[in-house]
Length: 460
Ligand SMILES: CC(C)(COP(=O)(O)OP(=O)(O)OC[C@H]1O[C@@H](n2cnc3c(N)ncnc32)[C@H](O)[C@@H]1OP(=O)(O)O)[C@@H](O)C(=O)NCCC(=O)NCCS
Image 1 (cartoon, rainbow, N blue to C red):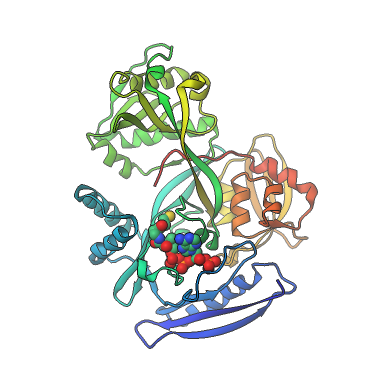
Image 2 (tube, rainbow, N blue to C red):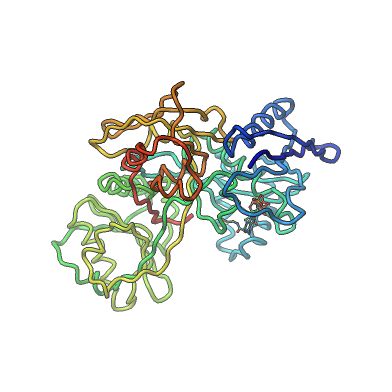
């Protein structure tokens, strides 16, 4: 790509119709994302002139991006701000026109969840004048990476009203979501994509898989092991459930699973349809799902408790022949059960974005015993302050990104940086056009540093 034409649409709310501003950026000597990052600086400086300016990029296109949509693309200026509580019904309407209607019981649950998110500054909406045309929620999670928990913004319910789709609203909303996530202190963001293209445009990349398996409930019933005392979970157990699930993720050095806030777990504990049982060092939460069981979460730090929790679920084998559960690829149950007692039911990718790369590297765990010093060059149009050349230094299972004036290293835009963070081999990133430059001899060191097979067990 020799050069690239860009444009921004500038609208003032309330005010006259939007104005297109053409920009021509020469990027012959720059990387593929240089133009968007310059655009980002331009947008930032214009935004400073007044809080009500609305800016929508007319076109910016990194290498390895999806094909442009039709001619109506990027037309509509919208204002992105917190959803107003008065607009809950309007937001529900956009949601229903995107995912289908909710049952009346689910509507109440949805409203109370969104109300909690609004109160925490985690529910953004796109407004066309006074009309809600899109919204997205930021769930507050802590995601495990190398056995340490990193604040993660789990993005859910991204919806754009059908008549506003294909006009840049979704991308503008996601860019605002990333910036809000950073302002709220999240250093990572993850989501399950219904389609990857809009999220890749916002810097997300495939990172891991949520895989559900069907287990023979009777095989669980027959697992050998000593009896372990279990008790039924009660309303006040939310913090204990958080602690028990965290202990398992830490012990197993997991990468990918995340923990819910205690407030959300309390909702499950109060729900008669969710069966929660606790031991001193483990917990299981499950329920009926048609003719099978669905395990929502299971975790234990001792093998005895883990088997006892599975046997508890297995005790229902006379009515539910199958138990469905999302598990990581190294879950011990695969080593406990025979192959004809386990079958894969579904597999779904999730995507990751680094919201604050330096903080995410400092917060996650790295392999013990590994010492690495490798330069990397990051460029993020949504984080100019976090862009530049750094030395990635790893020692004592901790990492740091130290800014350097030295020579650049492997060059990564947000998608490549996210995929590397999630353990994607550098050779794969190079082949996919998501990493360039650097010293090929350093690739193996980066692979060793970020090695992981990330998974998730929860859906959001
Ligand atoms: C998916 C959705 C949020 C995208 O919003 P949008 O406003 O239409 O997206 P934008 O116009 O900002 O498009 C952003 C990019 O994504 C691409 N894109 C948007 N929808 C797409 C789709 N359904 N399939 C493939 N690419 C798509 C666009 O082409 C554009 O990429 P480009 O600039 O490289 O051409 C919207 O279509 C929607 O609400 N769909 C129904 C609900 C849903 O699936 N939500 C997502 C849940 S994860």
